[in-house]
Length: 573
Image 1 (cartoon, one colour):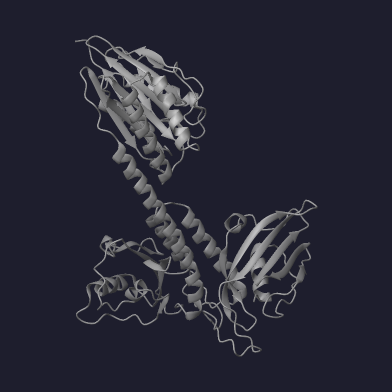
Image 2 (image 1 turned 180 degrees about the vertical axis):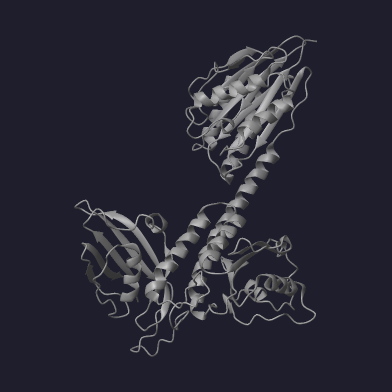
């Protein structure tokens, strides 16, 4: 299924000085052959279960995949054009990986798999299965000039390969689905289209235009063309409606004004065409699990290099990969939103007590789409004592948020029912967690605040969590680490310790999770010292301001959730 010219055109773009080739056109599949280059590079091609396999061996250490190409294609299944022996251009998938030979050489193993059905052989006239997308003729690869340029498969294949690789990089550079589409459109306008736009359907079926990008950054695109679009109606003539209903990709070569009076969506589309120009376009559906959730439109304005039907199969493969990447980002975003809503729903209403001021903050990560198991809690026991809890369940997904909810509720039940010292409460929590969810681990600080008219005392125990930080009104700081012990989920039979601390009036007791201070490239000791300096500077600030300033100073570049719980005793009565 793979022609000699395609194999050589790909290798010319990947491996230096491949000059000797073998005939690979025998039968429907590639036959066994070995291609020797004068540089010592070997290309071994064979077929296994309907797939063509290629091994590129290099006897010289300074040869192999071109360095700037290697990271963009290794390990990635990339759709590329191939020339069939009957002269047709068909899309196939190329995957290249590295292996180490017995003699220590590094070799590149490539796999070529067809993505279309093979043609009906003349020996089997009864088999009427057609090729899914027969595309005769050469590939017309777009150029950045206005000069018409029709490229043969030999020269087009590496450029299409580069386009697919650049699109893959754009899709993996962010977890935001809308931003993924914007970056993909930026790639497409560099080499495939003069301008590009992406539309998405929401859960209610409303259409929203995510982006419109032109190759020339000086060409203005009004904000009126972005955002919600008019409802899609049955009278809409635009090809976008057909694509959203499951057709396509559609090649549009006759771009004419809509009927009078135009449908609102047609009118919006025509206004954009008049502003940016259009000679031909390809409108492709963004499809996931057989459902269309949007469309990607690529437009060329130059009549000298219009889109042709030969471009459609490769564009279809490209957009299929884009749709998969965007849909994955949408699913990830949906899971993150659910986890965040669950976490916020579990945030407690802080109790009120004489002479005690309480403030808490929870901030999800601002740089990733992950949600962790951070939580805080505060409630009043039947005895009148106040419980302060902060913890972090391992994991960064919806499962971690559910585990956090389970642990929180178990801790509440144990604390209210037993009303025992902190170390005993954590021991019972550890035993319950090990029994019900033996794979889960978590950190936690459990504090019991006893207050009367004159004094406030903290009785606390820690299960592997960062120690609370006490900051006096004068700016003195000290970490409370006397009650430290093992994580929840390690060994519930080991004894736990607790400690007591008298809290001075107007001092600030801070419980926090590691997302507040941990940064890549900085040791934990340095981070904890940095937090001490910050709380010392904020010692006399109102408690709300104290917490907000810490979030502003430490939360801008965090890659984790942040939970804070602060307590400040008042003066004696």
